[in-house]
Figure (cartoon, rainbow, N blue to C red):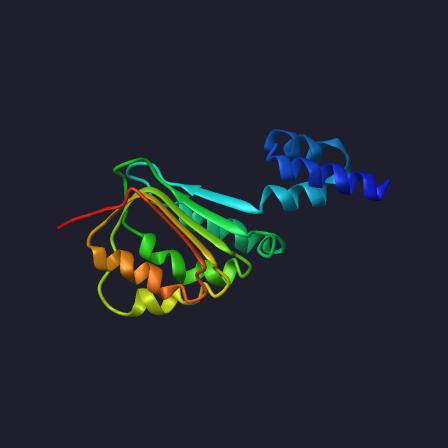
Length: 168
C-alpha cells in the first residue's frame, strides 16, 4: 500500500499536475509528506509593481519551515514585464543558506540593477549547487551586470538567455 501511494504521488509530480498534488495533500495523512515535498520542489516568488517583499516572504517561510529547505530544487523570481526588482541584489544574501539544494535559478520579466562592488559577486558564489540559470525577458542596467551574474555561478552547466535587453 505504501509503495502504491508513493508511485501515485510520483506519477502526478512527473505529469506536472499541481492541482492533483494539492488534492493529494488533503486525501489522507499518509500522502501529505510526499505530496508536500513535490509541491515545494519548484518555488516561485512573484513581484508586483511597488512591492518588493517577495524575497522577504520566501525567506520567512523557509525560516519558519526549515524542513522544506532541502526539498526545493528550483527557484523562479518572476515579475511583470517592465517591473524593476530593485532588491534582486539581495537574492544571494540569505537564499543560498536557506536553499542549499537549489540547482536551477530563473529570473523572468524583470529589470535588474546590480550595485557596484564585489559584494554581490561574492555572495552569488554561495549558490554552489546551481547548475542551470535561465534569464527570460530581463532588462539589465548594463551588459556587465549580465556578465557578473553568469560568471559568479561557478558550477553553471546550462544557461538560457531569452530576449535580454540592457541600457547603452
